[in-house]
Image (cartoon, rainbow over all chains, first blue to last red; front, side, top):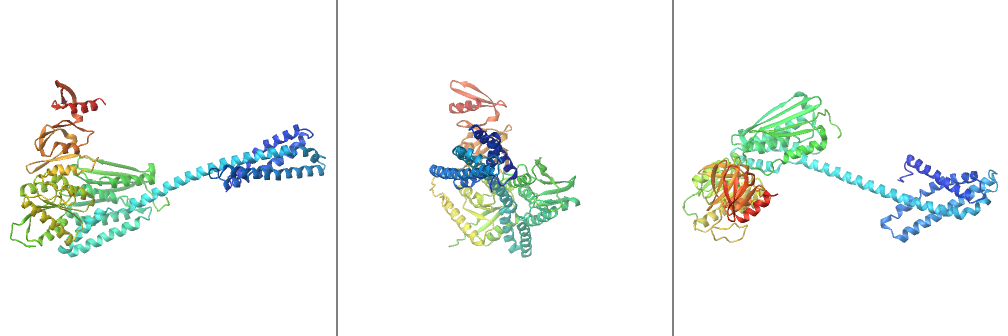
Length: 356
Length: 270
């Protein structure tokens, strides 16, 4: 798209700039003798505007010979040839207009008087055309820069989206390996329970699979995913896990990003319960107030537990996802005291699926 | 394989998950020459059981309550065949660096388990003849007495990842010293004496391997025999000709060697 022709406002401004140029040409004509100011203006202004339009064609020759990929001779040849052609055409137009003005007896004998100025006008036209070429090269560079910037921005957005998708889709592989090992143990001692665990694990995996595609799910759906996760972990850890849910009724329908809370619960199991010999508890509270959903996930933990590799990865992911999606509208706080680990988050309570 | 009616191999199983212990017990149950003498669900129990029972073979999980598998090994001076059993594959190199016989990844089948047990038996057999086999992965032949496990465990730590706590053992009891509670450490023959909160704890480890495991921006070797917590240093005073002492906040005086003084001066002048 032509940067000037494609935009009415810019075209107006561009043509406006040709009025003083027309004035200058008129001044040159009037001072060269034999032509009155009125005649000069009548001739120069419309022809200047016409040449303005003709100069817009420089964009195509500029685009055809990009500055940094064309040899100097090619640049010079292309633009000088175009300048000569355009200026020749224009002189022809000048002649035609002068002739018409004379024939219609508006300014009798103008064509004869102006004919001595044709070489001068041709020179001016060539110079103006070359100026227009320079202007178009500037415009082209600006356009390229803007496009490059937009591309970088777009690439950034795409990368972020891909990252989010990956974050959402992640199921901790060690959870899988440990669960499979539990099933392997149960196959010989308690076949019924082994089958039950296979079904629970399959149920959990199936639920997580579909979620990577969705941008939001009701809190209730996330809670049932967490229940499926804990059902598997309860077979692994036996009576060591105790889960308490306090989700307000109004909160159940609020839309949240999928797999936002499951990593927090997984964290509570992996870094909390798994380190407690006697087991521990997890409590999840959710309530909705003044358009804000507040969720607290708390669990008991051993502050003297050995350090673990994946420590905090789940928390960092959740924090990032909230920040990317809601910016300042969401908060995320992690606190802990002697034996209690607490993650509190707030986010805008969106009621139905919205395109984000 | 000829099966002589010899002494049964005493084995300890350590895993915090009952079902994971059950798999091991089941597979081991097919081997009458193996006797499971203890099952432990956390690191403290493991240290206690190994110290008291001195088993020949140890199946060890890595991520557990209280102490992880590597910390357990740091506290044990008893030599035995060790097979790690874990769902994490990222500890494998570290495991072989502490001379583990094998590294079982959960879930594993009977074939893989038998292979691990076979290697463990080889190791136990070699040891009973008085020799010590080098792990197959490392390739270098070790004929001298191996360094204490604590040194190996420290050497296996990935670089730029310093310890946050030092586990120590007194008899069968285990104490955890967070490194910010540690005032200084002193070399005493094959042991280091760790001074924290006015108490001293002995640990079988060389001072050099402890130095390597501690964050060098917080701890400094000021003397052949001393590492000090830099936050505890109140001042450095001349002591005799060419020698200095570091005075800690609690008044303790530690000798500073000439090289140590240069390092300490550079740190204090920053």
